[in-house]
Image (cartoon, rainbow, N blue to C red; front, side, top):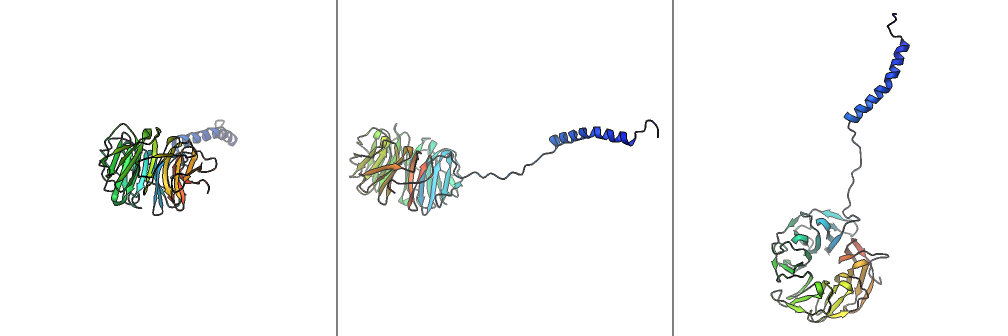
Length: 324
């Protein structure tokens, strides 16, 4: 063996010195050329998130629908498990109403109107030039495909074809009409500054009615000989002559009220800071409570469903009635 020929010991020493460099090179190769694909479980977003806000709710034939921010529509058959329906818009939806379990209409910001003929499997936008980009605040449905919608800048529109087309039912003015009630040819609309307008011919002509309050009225209901309106500052108004004359009723709260609906034993109203009111059949005696213990969430709409009450707002779900 010559002097220049490495011995086995020398080879081992060289290899030992090269080993760290080989490891570093391998790590660098992996860092730049090897793509690691993590095996992560798919994250499924819930249909109703903690930060979601819903403004309208309706029920029919054992099914619920709720609408809210960014064009969101959800549905449920038990009030606990919700599924989301695809809509063609991202504008906030303020209200929803149903003719039956297949035909529904929802309205919202920017003159948005969407309708479905299959229970929400497919929602379609409706062109509403009569709205002229104004925000809808409420929609109500009635027999024969009739619907009424109210909104900003004096908007009161009527549809007679299940929401496919709309026409103005009242001249526009600088006021927000918040809700509408219809019984036969009798029509009531309520809005800002305590204003109430009444029609006795299906909306062909209108007259102003003195409400006796200056706070905005947000919701109205009309039955046989009796009408109720609720609004800001806890106001409840009652009429026993189809809305010709109104009297203030003690509500027991100063919280804003946003919606009133008939119940088997009388009436239910919801509003700001978790307030829930129940009224007797005359609409003259009311009791105030909360939707739940330590519940201070606002709610803008409610519906009776499966022997309980569901509400939309800062929270979506069941509410407790005072005294139950």
